[in-house]
Image (cartoon, rainbow, N blue to C red; front, side, top):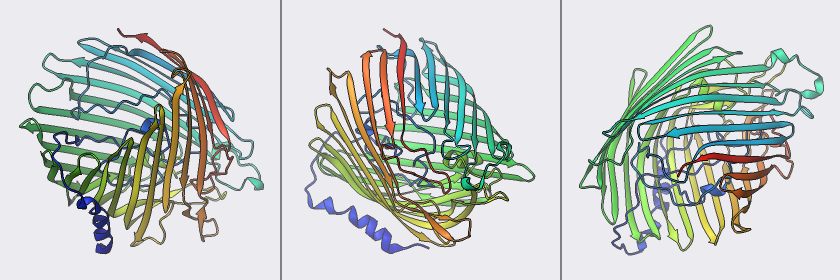
Length: 546
């Protein structure tokens, strides 16, 4: 049910910068925004500011800790992101590398290997990549181990008139165990707990590979996936996307986006879902303002839903304060694959349904000296939101099931990034959530707040040695106990340190230490993560292009 009190509150917090006097500035920021990744507080995010908040992820715990070790890629640069058309795939740049290998040994017992190779010339682009991530830690919890691996091949051809036609095929598998049970009661046979997921994928792209000489940009993408679930069924997914962009006067843009998302899941029964979306919009640029008007039209199975696609940005005073507000919408298929990527301990035969959301937003962002900031608020009206609910089988093993319900979410947050002094970077993010529930009892596995803090220094030994620290935190989340009563997952606090040493342009050693406080963090009920853990390894790049 719509709560207008929250809408006016969200818009109200955005209005306070209007006391300042507007100034003409020809350098209006681009509307191509790169959002912060909110899993780890990593310094590579320090120059990325979420200027226009998108709809919150359908599950706000999506990028919180998994139970496995997740090392961080330490090959960092801090240049401002390059502004470019939506589907631009640039030709090869000088002083880059054709291939890399990143290998590490982890504790508890585990390891990782990532490798890739890409060859480019004026006509062709081809490459391959592969990865292996594994962990074995049964010192406290039986069956707490996993293995993930995969490989992909890609091929692309540049045409003389600009477009790039590309294709790729890949294979991935994920083996893990359901270890969410009372380990004090004894052992359970491995076969009953092992989940094996195999996925074959293919992709075709046609994109504008060169900076358009005309004022037209375009892209067409087709993704196919076939997922086989040992303790579940099979799923076929198809994602087709197309976009067209036409510039007028070199700056005003007409955008048309078309997307079709399809999922067919089958075991004893069949579940089929499809969403077709059309988003036309026009964006007007001025030295002081940016105005965008359009609509989101969704055909969700056989039902039509519409949400606005509007945005207004007003430069109050140079780059110090930019006021913005708008309204947007989204719809998604909660495929089994997307559910598994969010919560790998789901039951193999969960319900596949669609989610629709409509979100007004507003805020202020800008730069003050060396600090970049974004203060925002948004209020999402969500229909058929996905929740993960504890589900205990005959052996009292928790295999999460899914339920769906309507709710509204108020989100108030901030991102702050700074190069405090030369080579010392810092970032801070904090989000507060308030849930107004309709037909669900509690907001299962959704926190009241979350955030992260990161610092990184790259000025030691003439820039060869880098040191960093990161803290991520999340409030308690509601869950369902085996007794049938409601409970809470404890708050999550994870403090980490990392270091890297660059021997030369092609070789870098790294060390990651996570959960230094050795806390028993459990983002999913009955599935505690590992305690203090780390990875040491090396990144090698080869085949330098001149």
